[in-house]
Image (cartoon, rainbow, N blue to C red; front, top):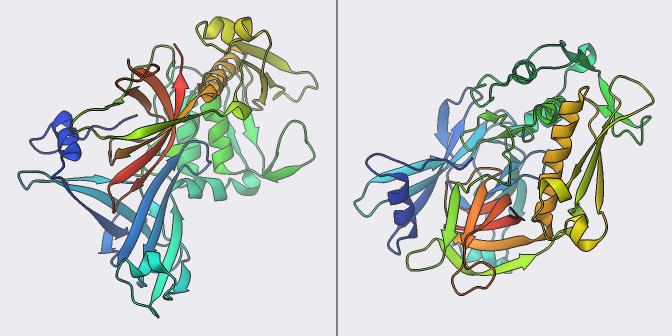
Length: 401
């Protein structure tokens, strides 16, 4: 998912070298756009800006701002597109969009002498400052739904066609990020106005959102969950086999490296599993269809597989939309691959690198470290980029081959 940073006469590798240079010059721009991506104005007076991508959230991208008041318009009628800008050693400019975010309602603050964070930025006491966290375009999918007419797909139709139909009905127009599929729906499926929150609480129901519908189809297709890339384009892409996937981004220490040490290792065992059991009763039957993914066979080198530790750590998932065994198997295998990465997580800081998107495979090498002296692979759970300081923090989850 990592993006190519090539710009003008500079290759991707040359841009990375410029980003690591001690003489690099960085800046940021914030365009105000309408819903058709037409630039209307620029957002001025920005004091701080952080872009975040978190794959565990329904709305994966966000932009947190602190700024001086500006008449932008009513909430949700405008969009903010920030740019990360690099001036190279030769004076050339390379700029990269860092997402598209819906303008919202600011929190207002009158600055006092105690607000040292703001006064150090040159804001005088008594001035008004706005703070806000803007969601990316996933907000549109999470808040709206098909209404009383519901939404349905036909048996035999392609998964990619179902995704495109739902995305179009939700109001999206750029469908170029939807990967083509050959697999099809084994039978017709319909989503009503409301949906059970889980199979364990069938009488607890909530409005069916476009996100829920698209998430169901993505799961059946073996795709990552719905998300928008940093160009603001909806993405529906397959999950790679983590036992064979190679890094799109790599970090290593040394002179002119993007990596800032030290590195902190942690674990997220509350989300770990070495066996995943998926079930579905989408046909309305009281009986379930089951599929099991086991690390013993799927990830035979994992140190926490049952054959090593002597017991299973289970996750049970309910895939209400799946009607075919092969689709349920795919769901179980994909969830197992994600759950196994939680046994070790890495928190690290780097200089800003706009190559990152969501779900990146990242390689990490740390010289003179017994565990990471040779490159180890990680699945990125999320990152934050400070557009003003030019630094970036990452949450990486260990992949065992």
